[in-house]
Amino acid sequence: MRGTGTIGHGPADKPYAEEWIREARALPRCEWCGGAGDKMPRVGLCRSCNNVRKRLIKTQQWVSTERPIANRQGRFLLDRELAIVKNMQRLCEADGHRLHDLLNGEVRPLQLEGWFNDLAARIAKKPRLYSTAEQLGWSFTPPQRQLLAYLFWQIFHVHWQLNRKNYAEVLYSTEVRRAEQRQGKTSKG
Ligand SMILES: [Zn+2]
Image 1 (cartoon, rainbow, N blue to C red):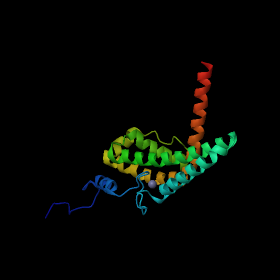
Image 2: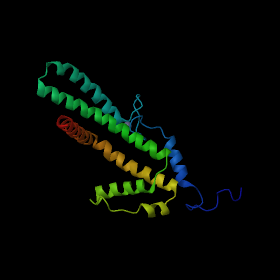
Image 3: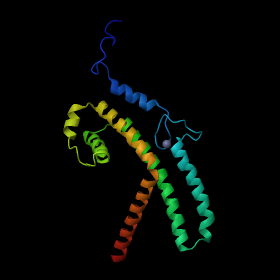
Image 4: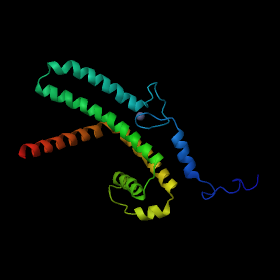
């Protein structure tokens, strides 16, 4: 049994990052956001996503009863509410896609730099603290970059979950602004 990995416990001896990523891939995950570790209700969603799902059903019912009898302002508010809850679902799924991509594809040094900068923007209020993509590429092997990105995702995932509604509102405002700009352009041209 000598020489079969029983000697030494240093990072160089074993492909720990690969192993960790393999384990992460195998975890049961929420079908929308990719979160793990939470008890999944029967629909295959984590508690947070399941709340979004229930909220969407309620809002759809509410809008379908209220909209026919609402005035213009009322219809606007109902449509807005529904659009925001739909955005919440889209954002849940976007988290899951992001996780899927990083667990199953390559994490480029520039992407890793992006995660560091996102974190720096939150904690140190400096959105461009790092411009070290090249060094990150030299310092970390591809599996290590993948693992680091995964660990960052876990931190941000909690933040995104807690702020789902805010992000959905921001997304809604951005979409409305864009639609207005497009309309402005077409009416001019
Ligand atoms: Zn979820």
